Amino acid sequence: MPIFKTREFFSRVVIGRSHSFRWNETNLVEEEILNVTYEDGKWSKPYFDCGGGNIWMITYMVPFFGYNGHNETYYFKGTSGIDIDLRRVDIDQCPLPANSTELNIFAASDKCKNATTKCVPLKGLGFRRGSYRCICKDGFYFPNVSSAHKYFNGTLLEEEYEKKFTGFWQNETSLYDMDGLFECLPCPFGCDTCVDDRPCVVSLNWLMRTAILILQGAIIAMLPIVGLFTYKYSNVKVVRAASPVLLRFIVLGAFFIYCTILVNYPSPSVITCTLRVWLREIGFSLAYGSLLLKTWRISVIFRVRSAKAIKITDLDLMKRLGAIVGTFTSLLVIRTLVAPPIAIVSYTADELKAWLCKSDWWDHSMMIILANLSYIQHFMLIPGGGEYDDDVAMLVGETRRERRKCGNQWIFPNSDHHCYTTALNASFNSTMVSHGTLLNNPMPCLVELCFLVWGIRLCIVVRKAPSEFNESKFISLAIYNEFLLSLFLNISMYAIF
Image 1 (cartoon, rainbow, N blue to C red):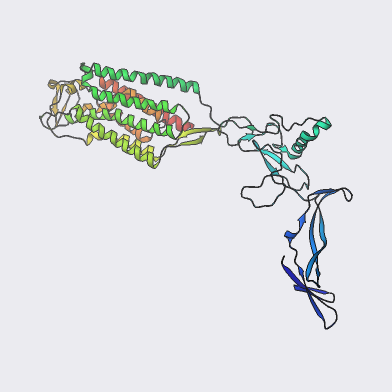
Image 2: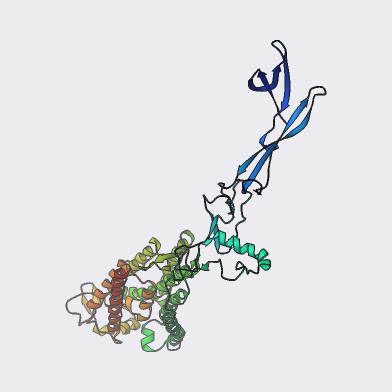
C-alpha cells in the first residue's frame, strides 16, 4: 500500500507525506501511516435492514491500521463504514450495450423473453425489481393491437417468474413459461417494423402470373416447331424468299425474349435481374438484327447505281449478325461487371413494398443503341450493279420485268411519283418478337416510341408497294399494334405511378 504523512500542529491537521505531532514547543515527532484506497474497501450485498428503518441498504467498509513505533510495524485496528439508503437508487437490470465497460452487477437480470422482446430500463422507480419494460424487437408487434401500452411490465414478469419457484407452496400457477404469453408476434413477410398483422408487401396475383407463365410456355414450346418447319420446308417458295437461316435466328431470338417472362416469375433477385437483361438484349440482337440485315440486303440492292449484279449471301449476313450479337455481348459483359442489375425495394401509394429490378442509365443506353441499330442500313452500303436474286424479287412481290428506273434507283411501277426503297419495312416483319420486348420493358423510353413512329412512316410510304405474299400489309399491322400498345402502356403507367 502507498503511504502518506500528516502533521498536526495543535488542532490543525495538514495532509502531507507524513503524520507528525508536537509533544511540546520544541519536540517534533513524525509518524508514517498507510494510505487506504477505494480498492481496499468492500461493498456489501444489498440487504434489508429489519431492525432499523425497514429499508434496503448497502454498506461500504474500509479498514484502518495502527502503527507500532517500537517495532515499526502496522496492525489492524478496525473498519469504518458508510450505510447508503437504496430507496432512491435506480437499478438497471437490462443487458449492457456491446463493448460497454460499465460496472453493473444487475445487468442482464431482466426476465424479458429475448427471442421477441428487448429490455428498456425505467428511471425514478428506486431500488426494486422490475424497473424495466419489455418492448417488441424490430420485426415483431405487440399481441394486443388495441392496447394503449405496447409493452410488457417488468414488475409483472418478475412476479410470474418468482411463482415458478414459490407457486407450488402457495398453490399458484406461473404464467411465465406458457406459450404465447409475454411474447410478441412476428410481423408479416417483408416488414421491418409493424404494429399489427397487416401486410407490408404487395400481394402478387399468382393466378394471373401463372396464366401468363403457361401462355408463355406454350409459345416457347411452339418455337422449336417453327424452327423445324423452316428447315424442313426451306425449299418452299415463301420460306426460301424469307431466308430460312435468318428465320431460324429470329426464332432463337424470340425464344430468348420470351424466356425473360419465365425469369420474371419468381421474386426479383440479382440473378434473375441479370438474366432478364441478358436474355432480352441477346434475344433482341438476334431477332431484330436478322430483320435489319434482311432489310439492309434488299436496300443495298435497290440503292445500286449500275446494272452490275450484287450477290449478298446468307453467310455474309450471318457474319454481320455475329458482329451485332458480339457487340451486344460485350456491352452486357461490361455492364454486368461494372454495374450488375440489382433488385430494389419500391413502395406503392399504400406504402406497400414491392421488389423490382432497378433500371439505370445502362438500360436507357441499351435502348438508345437498339433504336440506333435500326438505321444501320443507311451506312452499310455496298456499291455495285442493280441485279438481284429471284428470292429477293419474290420477297417484294415483283420481277425484273416490273421494275423501272427513277433517278439512280429501281422502283415499282405502282409507286406514285416517289422514289423509295420498298424493302426498308422488313425491319418490322415479326409480330412474335415485338410483344416480347414490350412485356419485358414495361415502360419503353421515348426513343423506342420514336423508333416506332419512324416505322409507321415507312409503313405509310410502302403501303402501295406490291408484294406477292402481302408482307407489307402484315408488317404494317404489327407496327401499328406495337405502337398503340406501347403508347397506351407509357401513358397509363406514368399516370398510375
